[in-house]
Length: 209
Image (tube, rainbow, N blue to C red; front, side, top):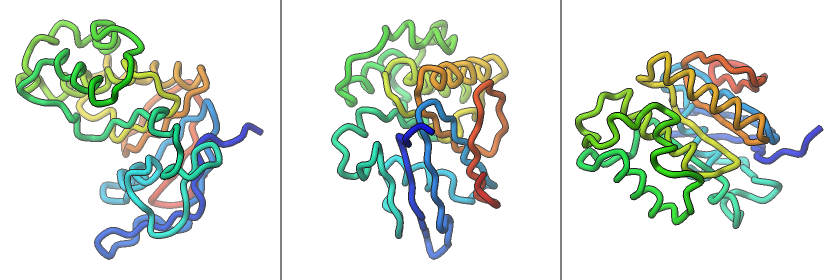
């Protein structure tokens, strides 16, 4: 049995007086794909943010390679978190947005901007201001960060939103490749998706399996 890269122990999370997560534990090793699913408002985003160290649970702990995420010197550099908001500046084009995100991350890109955009067939509209793009096109630009930045852990919040069949297939293929290379992916979504990789499911509407 492989040692866990990311582990959560007995998480309890309340927001606005509502209990979202109670006594939840998980252990995710290299190559795992974890699907956090549940109805709207069930706490998928909150749980994902807690696992990323962006939200402090009311009780319980999250660790990276045995070290609490809040005190891990390496976790931030190993994480690629893409939220359900694209975090793109509407006045900038795709390339300008990605260059800005590179500067914020202070990391050397794993490939060129053109190569990253091409993985999601986003090059042909890359010189348009993002505010002129459709929701699906903006999502493609946002997801190009998965290719642009090397990270062992991907955390994706509703990544399939607004994507057409072609873009969904590209993302599914990328997740499978990441798992095959020993990466860890956590996906919070109520939507179904098709992967060759085995899924571990955290069901916030019921039991975890």
